[in-house]
Length: 371
Image 1: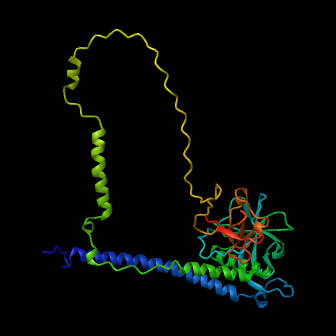
Image 2 (image 1 turned 60 degrees about the vertical axis):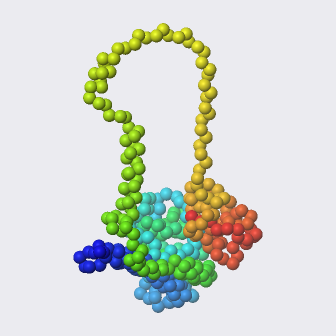
Image 3 (image 1 turned 180 degrees about the horizontal axis):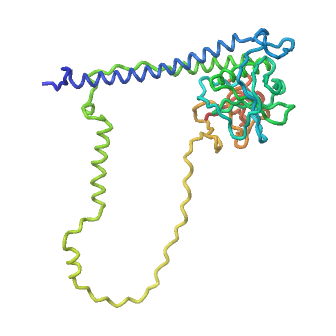
C-alpha cells in the first residue's frame, strides 16, 4: 500500500508540487528583476534619442541663455560642494550606469557644502543658481568628472578653477541627473551616437541573460532523500559525521581503567644502566627553508595588479581605476578614450573598446580586459 499523507496524495506527488512551487517562485523573482533592468535600459535609450532640450524650459530662471543654448533639465534642491584637499579627477566619459546602487544623502570625507540652489543642465554647461551667486561649469573647459558610488555627489574640475567642486543632489534624482549630464556632455563633443550605441550594446547583452522557464518536476523524479527533513543536505551531514567521529575516537587517547595508576605505582623500577660513552653523531642535514608557493591568482597573462584586472573573462571595465597605468602599459591618449578597456596588439591598453577606431595606431585590438 502506498504511503499517503492527510490529503490522500503520495509523498512523491507532494514533493513534486513543492518543487514546482519553489521553481516558479524563483523564476518569477528573476523575471521581475530582469524586466526591471530591461525597461530601464530601453527608457534610457528613448531618452537618449528624443531629449533635445528647449529654450522654454529655462523660463522663470535667472539665467540668460546664449544663442543656440537650450535647457535639458532644471533640478531644485541642489547644493554646491567643495573639496578641502587637492585631488585629480578622471577625465569625463560617456559611461551609462542603469540601475545603480542606492545612494545615501551624505557628504564624503573632505567635502563640505557651501551653497544651495537650482542646478540647470544645458547643452553647453552645467549651472548652479545659488543664494550666493551663480557657478558655471562649461563642458569645453571640463577636465575631470567623478560620480561618488555611495553618495549623490558629482565632482567637477575645469581649467580656470583650482579648487575641485561639484554638486550634491537628492538621492532619488541622482541617477537621472548623472545620465542627463552625460548626454549633455556627449552633445557638446558630438558623441551622442556613442551613448546610443553603448545602450544598444547593453540591451543586447542583457537580452542574453533572460531567465528561462523552469522544467516541471514530476513525481517520478522524487528520491528517497526527499522524505528526510533537509533532503540531501541532511544526508550529506549524516554521512560526514559517520566518517569523522570514528576517526576522532580512534586517534584520541585510550580511556584509563580504574586502579591503573595504583598498578603503575606498584611496579618495581629497574635500576638505571650505566650511561654509554658519548658517540659522535653525524650532523643532521639542515633543511632549506620552504619556498613560498606561487600565487594561484588567475590572470590569464595580465600583470599582477591590486585592481583584479585580467584577460580571463568577467565584466568589461568602462571606468578603470586611476592606478591602472602603474601596472599596465597605457596608450598615450588613454584617458581620452570613450569605450571599455582593451589590450592592443602592441601590448598597450586603451579605452576605445567597442568603437570602430579601437586601438587605432596600435595595430588593432588583441583582447578585452575584464574585472
